[in-house]
Amino acid sequence: MTAYAKILYPTDLSPEAEVALPHVAELATRHGAAITLLHIVEPIMATPMLNDYSMHVDLFDRAITDAIAAAKELGPKVLSKHIGPDVPTEIRVVQGYAAQEIVDVAHDDGFDLIVMATHGRSGFKRFLLGSVAEKVLRQTSCPVLLVPMAKQD
Image (cartoon, rainbow, N blue to C red; front, side, top):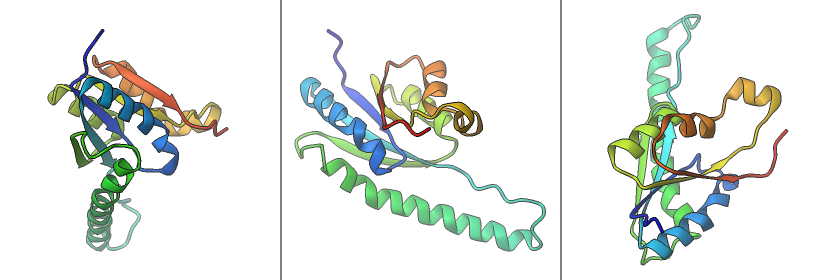
């Protein structure tokens, strides 16, 4: 049986994404693993059509800073719903593109397993929004456990 020492739990911090947490908790408890909750704040792109570009860049920077602060505050609350105090946890909030950041963090920090929820989008929504889970599966060498959310067609 494979032992997992470090489990990465990437999440958008939505209540629906918490469907993966019982699996994360069970695996961490069973294997004595540490859990890292990873939240990615995607960059906000300024458009050249805006009149005062520098003002909008300042607003975007502030929005990103606020999103990072909110995620750092919410992360421990999310984990505490399912993870006991005896399981080592870490909250990490980074800025970037979700799939690439998940793959990079998993590789660079030597995670043994990625456990994440998948939105289950299909059709046009999947075409427009892409699938972070699919990109992670294709790009990482780390095992990935995907937990489906309720179907959202």
